Every structure is written in structure tokens, then in C-alpha cells.
Length: 173
Image 1 (tube, rainbow, N blue to C red):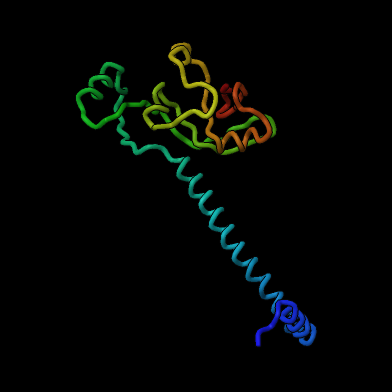
Image 2 (image 1 turned 30 degrees about the vertical axis):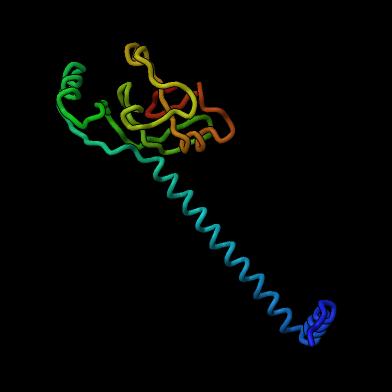
């Protein structure tokens, strides 16, 4: 003898009313299980975002060499044509962590003084704005490119393009 769906619902509700404490604890356990699963999935998503952010902030594999007084442009061309496997040469005069300010916002960012082909050599793409130009170097213009994380810290509600940043006592645009 099978129970009809209506009889099954009546038996279920009578059982729930007959044992209210057990019913409450069972319901609480079900909700706690759902919250635990949801929290675990959120931890996974957040962890993936943090790892992705850290990987995006890294540069392409590099070999650093130092020569004094430095490699001249003709020597750099010769080196890049003679040595197989080198995709390009870029001059990085210095790199350090500096306090960068813009209005009331401050952040410690890694700053690099680089040559014109730095972005291409490191496989970096601009999201917005422009790359360095030859005139920037020839005229010693104080220009810079900021990554997305730095832009979020210093320009949370504004477009960073064309804005001025101050670091090391100098203003960069």
C-alpha cells in the first residue's frame, strides 16, 4: 500500500510537529551545511583572485647584468643580433620601492627607470593610455606608466590617465 503525496505530506508535518526540537536542530544543521559549502567555495574564488593578481604583477623571466658605464645603443643592437634566444634588451637604471602620492592617497609602489622598449620586452600590454615615446626620452620628460593595482590604490574613483604622481620629490605625469 503506497502513500499518496497528500498523505506523505501530512505524515511529514505531523512528525515535524511531534518533535519540534529535533526538527529545529535538523533545520539548523541543514542551513549550517549550506553556509559551510558556500564559504568554502568563496574561499576558493578569493584565493584564485589573489593568486591571479600576484601572477599578473610579475614580469617576464629576465636576466640582469650590470656594466659600467652601461651598454650603448649600438652595443645593445649587436648583442641582440649575435645572441640567439634573446628577445630583446631593455635598460633598467634602477628599481626600488618608493612612496608614491597623489592628493590624499599614498602607496608604496615598486618604481623602475626603464628604456623605451620595456613593456614589449616584458610582454606587458597597456590597458589604457600610451607607451613611452622617443620624444619622452630625448626631452627628458617625467612620464610614467602605472599598473592596475597602483591605479586602484591611488585613483580609486578617477581615471589615472593624464594625472600627476609625486615620488622621490619629483612629479610624474
